[in-house]
Length: 488
Ligand code: ATP
Image (tube, rainbow, N blue to C red; front, side, top):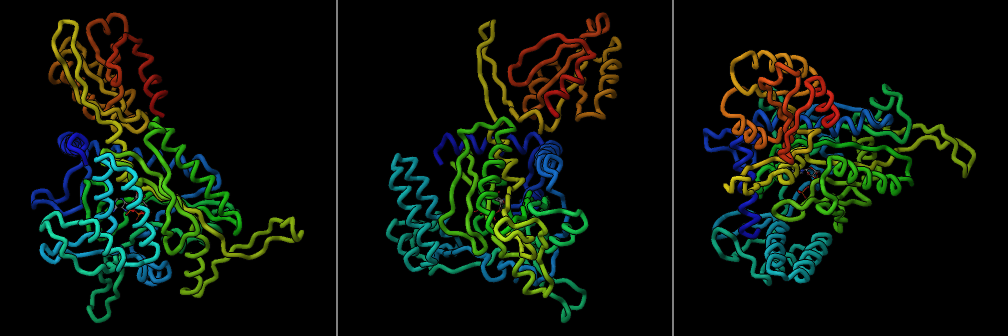
């Protein structure tokens, strides 16, 4: 990361803490690595992102329904899904510092430095080589790649590496009170398996016909070794996943459909298209026949925010095998090739999987701006503003009486009572109006209204727009519909 991008990222992290968006977990005990808590405005923003996703998936798609499965699942789930055997990352330890690294992170770190030095082709060649070796699971050559590129441990400064080993990322715990009888169970590393094991329950009870989807949001846990970059990579995080069940043979077209539809979802928030790109996977996960990442240009470079995976019938087939329960669907549509119903089959699955916390970081990265300008009187002025898309802003409207007297607070309270059932409002009478505006800018509130003495005479208020800082007088009666129109 260059100094300017590093600075911008550090400023975003400080801002997130100072204004009640994100706190380090158990901060009074010096925190817990890669675990975070969301404060008053953070929890609102997170909920709004989740709701926006949920609505676009379920309410806007007649053939997608929701589910809320438990975090704990039968241990065989993770055997069937392949996570017990395959959910691991190649790791390497530095013998001098005893620090453990993910091999791909070490190599990506070097590639980032090369790019910053303008050596783009070298960086691409390095990443391509790494992808190739990862796909072949050739750990000897991968270690050679580290050594030949002189990649060193950031702490010891040496290249005294162990061999590369696989390290499973699942957290385990015990269920049951008596130790001898206790079963090892896992904290789910993805929400998807809750959907797969409930596939027939949902299909039958909601009377779904293929193609259809099941959407779910919830916590997932991964014992990430290199957990850095703030909430980008956490050990406890939240996913928003949708599994779309399709007829075998049609997965390619649904994969293309969801690839496009999911990018459009991001753009529908007003996020800039040039900050996005697709990245096709070279090394496919054990369950996939096609996969790509939707990447966003964070302050520390283009990184994955969402994955689109064509998971074939891998999961359902293995759950059928290990549980002994049929995971088949009867398709009574007529197959034009045979003139008979398609009949029984295990559906194929296309998955869309986005990290809620990563999306939150994306929104903060996009929104955060420091602005400086010269006022009419020649004096310098500045502000920090979060240009959060109005639809997901933590607060939609600030209601600010100019002074604490002359009946202005009473009018403001009336407006508050009229609006607070429809969207999140904020009332404040302390400090100068300028200071109050700045605080609202800093937490991304798109609209402020000021109630002054003129309001009493002509029932108008001053509305101030966060992004332009423009102010205009509008009738009080128009406030609610104006805010609703911009935020629904
Ligand atoms: P990465 O390569 O960054 O480790 P992944 O490819 O393992 O991610 P998936 O298993 O595809 O990720 O998970 C889907 C989404 O969940 C990711 O696109 C990301 O947004 C989110 N996610 C995964 N791991 C984490 C994590 N440790 N912290 C926060 N979000 C995560």
